[in-house]
Image (tube, rainbow, N blue to C red; front, side, top):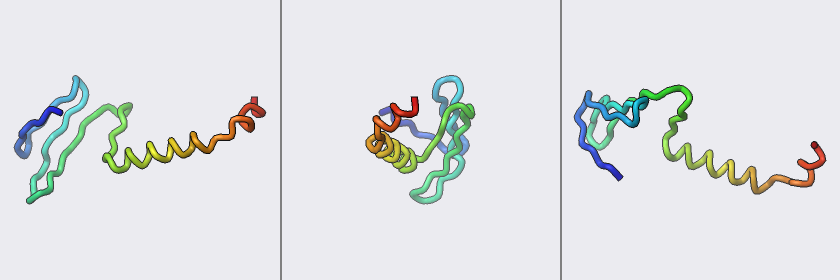
Amino acid sequence: MLALSRKQGESIMIGNDIEITILEVKGEQVKIGINAPKSIPVYRKEIYTQIQEVNRESVASLDIESLKKLF
């Protein structure tokens, strides 16, 4: 993991298309802004983890025989 120190108003670049800017620092909380192409999804990690779990559950519950009948 790369760890960088940034101050309010400073940014980092990820590749050529993603810019992360420190917007505000209040106590232990940091507000960041993310500028990325619309084609790149950006999620909070807890939301991303939930999406992955729902996807795994959906795949696990698939009835392959029912799907075969559709084709």
